[in-house]
Image (cartoon, rainbow, N blue to C red; front, side, top):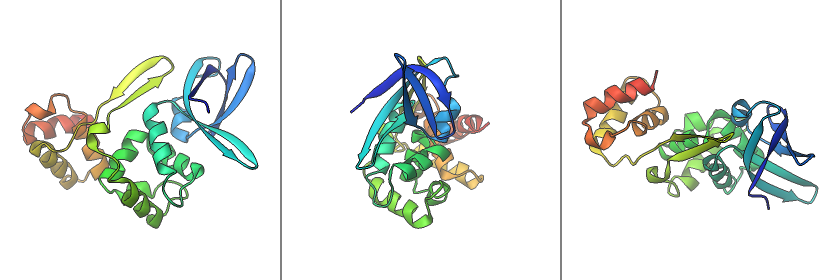
Length: 204
């Protein structure tokens, strides 16, 4: 129903916020990560929203980026994961991180979300891994009128794959290794050694 809600932040809690739109306070459910990145009370915010309508409730779920909203909508298509579970997933990792976790089949990282056990995490990976790809993993964050881009690129470059494998061998998780390599600028022109050095810098 609503594509987004834009107004003044009137209140923020860990799982919800109130946005004042022309003197009307709109209560919106948000993830813990969204709450942490929200502008302060009295400042303007824009939340991309998903509307959930049930017999006994009308709820709005809000996200600071379209990428997070997209991943939320994909998650709730999975059997056994409702809006509360999807919001829990996006409380422990943002949409970009969740996408990489699914693509790398990182069950351990996914099952850290509240209410998401190993079986549910496995079902999430099984149902979504073929619907996602690295080429669409670049997410633009639009936070309080500012833009911060997080770029993800395909892992079809041999050097990228080798750099990821090297990071994993060093003890990093596969999800964070893929994300670090994907964020290296000019990665396609680098060999695995140069990529590894640049990716390590992203880890610190």
